[in-house]
Length: 239
Image 1 (cartoon, rainbow, N blue to C red):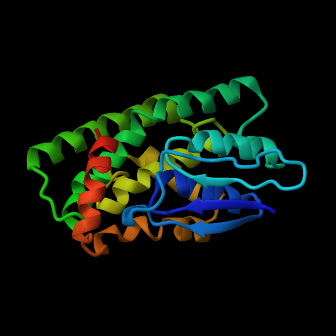
Image 2 (tube, helix red, strand yellow; image 1 turned 180 degrees about the vertical axis):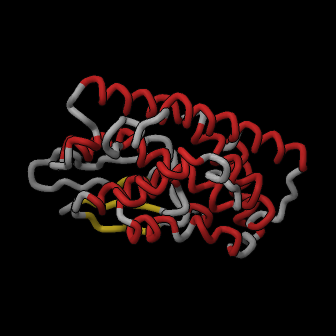
């Protein structure tokens, strides 16, 4: 059996893995899950028979471990070197971003999505103007670090070519974009970088992967039972 990916493209980690697999021609069967309808626990990923000589079956549900999954895919399949370079300096730049993003850009993009859109649209819960302002201010600080420290004057985060760092970063940034945040407005370097990443990935694939997140404002309200089930986990996730 081949690779089975259990994905919800509302999730940033799922989008990153989906784009990477599709872009690199990695054969897989898509198993769609709906995390907002009480789907599987997004904090777990299983490798039930990883490495079995006759049957490689990977059942993956993405949240925090997507970086490990992406790294596995670069090692298992023959993908172009630029995704995770053999050159130690270039690889160190990718590793630096991937280590930094978990509690910074990823956290702030997720908080922006929920505070600006999902709490009111999906859960029917108000967010105070003060909390929203604080969330967007934190996001702004993180975007400045992304632009000034990681991107600088380069084409991509690992310098001349797209890498896993760029893929993880752009899928993170589409969270606040989907919520209506003008992430790239007034940031010409970051806006130009986005265009290069989209072109490198392929605009059709990029739009396909982000269709769900770009329509979050049209989500129907959550069922009251599911809402009560989800709220504790959501609050813990965006702390």
